[in-house]
Every structure is written in structure tokens, then in C-alpha cells.
Image 1 (cartoon, rainbow, N blue to C red):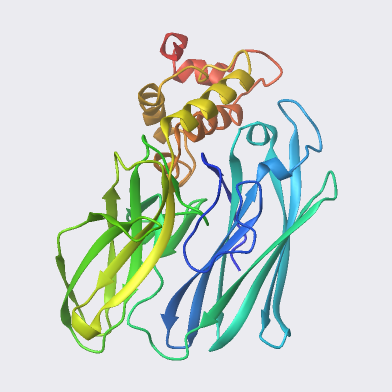
Image 2 (image 1 turned 30 degrees about the horizontal axis):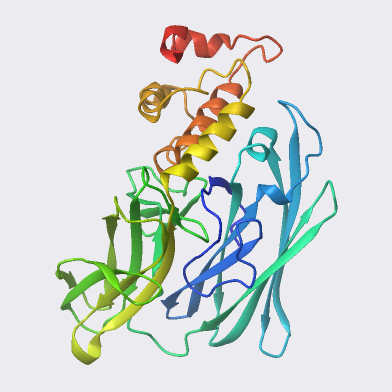
Length: 364
């Protein structure tokens, strides 16, 4: 299993996701989703576990405080036999614990033989001892399907020369790096919905396909023009991003229709669109909780993006890759943490290294 985690900011109440839903899916609950991809030696499962920070109590408080939790994962077959068991601890910084709507995302990856399984996750808060469990059922492919499950994401980027590892919050598929979570939640200022689906075919084909955004009552609000994609023998990938600016708040499904006639594969992923009032609430609450000397507390997203650009000269490896997929408050927290780690005198109110790179006049 992959043992890295990342922090996401979610802006809405109620959780939805792709693949099979977990039994607990509220914004204050642990959730787990599984997305299936066909492989000749079995079904590849990419799993995603969301751990809301509201569930956690701090071990210590203050600027250097933190909380911790342990995640345990089991996979059982239809007879109840445990086929896989794993677990690991995670630490969450104080600033993330204080950010409304924040959560940790834990990716999982493993292969399954044909059959029916249950993925069960248990989160235990170290400070309080509270536990919460969620599970989801998954059926591993008995034969090659026309297409994989549909994976929805916040962003998909093309790997660059030298890219070998996915950054925190990303899943790698070939040369693509996908930033996602169990419950994709868009907002008016972050309204791009990315998608990824593998299509399997015996021989080369030019495949027609289109996308629809569908309401819970089955109405198609958005239908994209038909596209044509040339696939080689064995199949290929359908991927891209859909701009949903102006979509009213609510719960929706993205439907991918790939093929024609009886050879059409339909794949569905769920997502949610929030409203401006939710973003404003999160921004206000976070600003109120910000440290008094925090230079990023009142900056706009455009101002923060300008301050992020010079960091390429200081960042380690792929540290900056996740920045573009973050919410406004996620970017604010990213910049705070970036400079806090590089403060040569954390006991003083001035971060000398930050001041040398970003003049204080740029903070206002």
C-alpha cells in the first residue's frame, strides 16, 4: 500500500464520491472510496480515505502543536476472511487542525483477484482514543471490462522529465499525476473538474465519446460536443478537464459515454458544487484564527500566487507541485507552512529568510 498522505480543504457539508460509496460519508465522518482498473494479473484498486480533522483532538496546542491518528485498513473476501491488513500513524499540524473543513487524504493501492471484497478502514484519534470506521464493497473484475471506473480529480498534470514520484496528494497513472480525494468538491472559484478513465479494446479504433453533467433527478445540465479519440491496440486513456463555472450549488454526477451503439461504455462519478457563501465562511473563520503576525492572512489568491512564484528556487523536489490544486485557504496554509519550516529563528517574531526573499511591503 502507499503510505503517504496529504491535507485537503473541503468546503461543503455532505460527502459524495466516485466508485462505491462508503457507509459513512458525512463531512464530519471518515469516508473511503475504491476505483477499479483492469490489469491482466488482476484488478488494480486505487483507494482513497478521507479523515476530517474535526474528529481529532490536539496532543499539544499552539503554533508548534499537533494531533495524531492511526489508520488501520483491512480487506476481506465474501466469506469474511482477512486477505490484507495494514496500518500506520499520521501527524497533523496545529494549523491544519484549526482550519475549518480541513481533512487528511490517505491513498491506498493494491491488486485483487476476481471476487467480491470489503475494504474497511478504522481511524483512532490518539489524544481522545475515539475511533470511527467506514467501509466500502468492491467487486474485482472477472473479465476485461470495456472501461475502468471513472476517476474524478481536482487537477491532472503531465509529468516532466525527472518526475519519478507522485507529490503528496497525487496518484500516478503512466505519465500523468492526478490530485484527487474520496469526495471531489468544487467551488465557484475552483470550478474545474478533471477526469480520468481507461478504455480497453482488442484492436486499434477511433472512439467517439462525450460527457454529461447530470442532476440527481436525471436531467443533463451540461453535454459536451462529441469527441473522437484514436486508441491503439489494447486501448487507451480518456482524460481532460471540464470548466463548470456557473454551475449552481448541489450534488451532481459526471457521466462519461464512450463508444457507439451496443459498444458504449457508461461510467459515472459523483461530485459536489458549493456556493460563494461557504468559501466566505471558511475564509472568515480561518482569517480570524490566523496568527496575528501572519503575513498571508489577508492576501487575495492572486497576491499569494505572485508570492509563490519565487519559491521554485527554495523548494525541495516536487514540493510545489500540489500548490496549483489547492483552495484559497489551502494556498494560504501552504505558504505559512513553507516559510515556517525555513525560519532560522522560530523563537522570534520575524522570519529573516522570508523577509530576505519577499520584502514586507509585498505582504500588504
